[in-house]
Image (tube, rainbow, N blue to C red; front, side, top):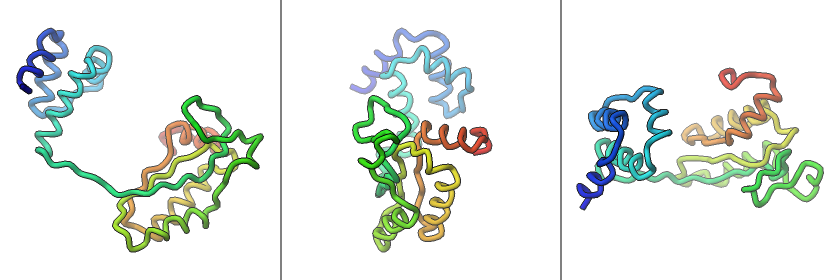
Length: 172
């Protein structure tokens, strides 16, 4: 069955996509330009098939999970993104919440002794919670639980922090 699906996905590919697919299947690294070709020309099903092939080659049928917990420092935000269901504009911040460093570190401490592997930090873009505030938070978390992987901040949050700090993405 899988062979039929793969044959169908690969049947009408451009020469460029065929060459890139062969490179991926051989375990070779693709170039930035080839990645752009995949993005512009590859169907979602084709890309999924390629990715699954790489996954199977690397991990077989093993699946990996992590146990994490979330910290949402605030729901006060300077933006009004359509997809966000819980933010409060800064002008209405009294209707929202803002956690301090100690509040967030106490959330981390609640997981002491539990087999969590990751803390995920994401929330509103609060104008008073700047890059240095969050750097202090990350340092405090690592000082308390060096074993935790920290997954933090959306691209929007980082962009705002870097612009306010007047530094580039590379410097951030």
